[in-house]
Image (tube, rainbow, N blue to C red; front, side):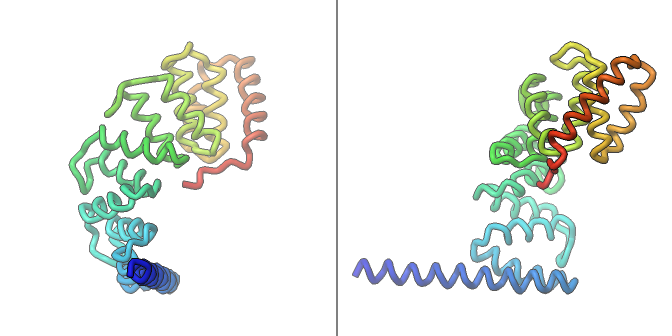
Length: 235
C-alpha cells in the first residue's frame, strides 16, 4: 500500500511540474507578443504551482505594473516567497525594497541579510550592494576592509558601481592610505566600462593627480582591463 501511495504521489508531482512548465511556455509566448495581461495570468498559474522563476517574474510584474496594476506590497510578498527558496535575484530585489522602504517597512538590517544571502550565491549586484552597506555602516557594522573585498569581487565580474566605489575608497583613504594613482585607475576602469560616474570622478581628479601617477594608473588599468575584458555583470 505504501508503494502505491508513493507512486501516486510521484505521478501528481510529475504532472504538477509538467503543468507549471507548460504555463511558463505559454506565458513567454504572450510576453513575446506584447500581451502582458495574458502572460501575467499564465505566470501566476505557474507561481501557484511552485515554479520558482514564475514567482520572481510575478513579483517583477507587480513591481513595475506590467500586465497587472502596480502593487509594491504584493511585489515584496512575491519576492519573499522566491527569496525564502533561495532565488538570488529575488533576494537582491527584496533587499533593495527593504533598503528603500518601498512596498515594505524600511529595514536596513533585513536589507543586509538578503544582500548577503544573494552575494554568497555569487549574485554580483548584491555583492556590490552589500559592500555599500559595509562602507556606510547601514544595517551592519561599518567595515572598510570588508567593503573593499566585496567591491573587488564585484569589480572583477564587471560591476561598474564596484569599480567606481573602489576608486572612491582609495581617493578618500577609507581603511587604506590615500592613493590617487589607484583611485584614478579604478575610475578609469569604470569609465571604460561605461560608467558616467566613473568618467566624472576621473575628470575631477585631473586637477589633483600628478602626470606620473596618471600615466602609471592608465598602464595598470590597461593591464587590468585586458585580464578581465570578458567579465560582465550579468545579474
